[in-house]
Image (cartoon, rainbow, N blue to C red; front, side, top):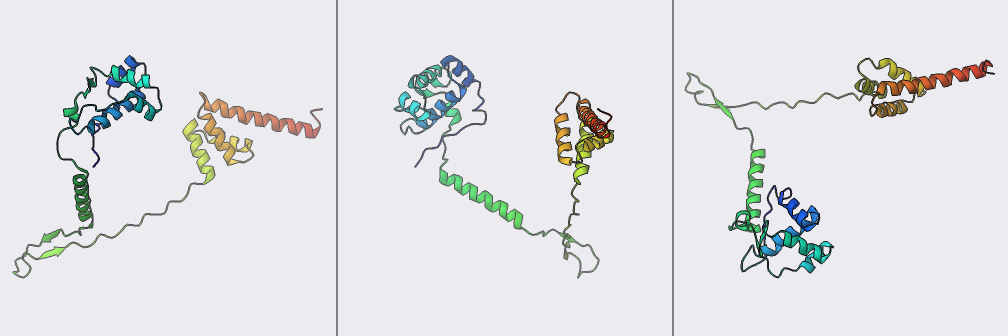
Length: 234
């Protein structure tokens, strides 16, 4: 049967890893990975759990795809922090001796599921005792009437132009209607292009100036085109 070891909630953020990483010149992720190998190794020691047995820097390095000297540097840097010789510090605290087999955990899990299922399936049996002077009705349990299901009202989808105006007010303020209208005209009525311009404006320091530049540029193009057609531009 496989041996289990426990991880604790603050283990990934333990400040000791940063100290060990600095000592060894390796990354924090490598330090935590090596420590996890140590947990598995010490947990599998049938003679004395918590003590490294047949530890091999080379084997761990191959498993992690790193250099052997990197694993050795991390192991040496752990001395006085998470290691005392070959013993993992705090093993008795983090890995208490008690029956914790997978069968027992499975049994507890099934019991919790069964309790939850019973709670969900149990009908409403709450009853009221109706006081009455009649011996016939005194103490009779009256079942509560069932609660009628409430059907939610359908929600009408938001019109595309309404979404553009709403987003315009979110970016420019409640008085943005005029600018949004001119922007839609500048984009030849294409709501998708207008919406994209508003989203881009939301990333600018001055969204209003950005959108007005688009509107004014379009207006200048339109004026030039009218002059060219009328012959005034020549």
